[in-house]
Length: 428
Image: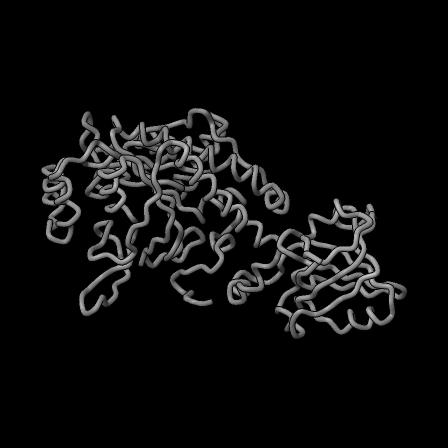
């Protein structure tokens, strides 16, 4: 008999079925026992009346893996309106050691550090796994949207010979006796691949050795990177980002509806035109000093509240960041060279995306590095490619875990990350 999932039970009323999963909970009443079995799709209620089977159920521990064969009957009070009766139960492994928290409770009561210490079992809780299902759907929507617009998925090295973001901290390692680093982003490579495919994207890990110990930073996270050629300026990049976010949101709604319901959240509407403000105006709105070179988290929160109040939007573009705060490959605003053709996208008052137009002329790269007092040699393989003809181009990167955290309302990005890596955590 082929195994079915719990969600298939309503269509099998009257049939004998085989389920398999984990003992989620046991309820031992005087005349009857209930065995709740959890599988990848949800929960199934098994009613046990036979004394021999009840004795077997009493000996089981929660999280033991079992197989159940029984008959499906309708019961409006059971999960999905059905339950399994007259079962036989067979353990598929030894009795499990129960985890240090109750997975059957609606919310995990253990502290986040305890959950992270025991991540392999904590992630089994429907609330924790729901966030990961949303994450998977978001990536699916990201890929599908860009595939439909002629982008090519690429896979670039995660071990590199020089840092990507000048001035940022990197994880150094030994590469057969030579110095190397974990890639901070695929920035250089995705730009070079514009010279091959014109439109590219990548889904992959990036590494930042920055000693942040906050609820929004990780030392390793998943970056959704996009780069496209033949742009007029950064506004073309912003238009593609808007389409991409809309595709991600739509796919989350279509493919992760149960996960959204578990968390009690809805997918935000991505406006047909996301409101945008220049950095100088953003400072005024946020009440920041006019000479502030960047936006602090408090400024971002104020801007998010403003966007929701004035435009009814969870999203806000801030354009024209000062060149002094942008990487050397950023294209300046021709009309205001002190400011960039770059942008950040705020999602509910938190920076989610950084992007912009890049330099595309070899001479401009040499000048940009010289202006910052940086040698060309560490970037030679990258910069040299621009001698061979590159179109005007630009791109962006979305932090997947931060996107899911803002979407679900998680207080800490680690709540939506399977096995987070940060300043303090390298296991499990």
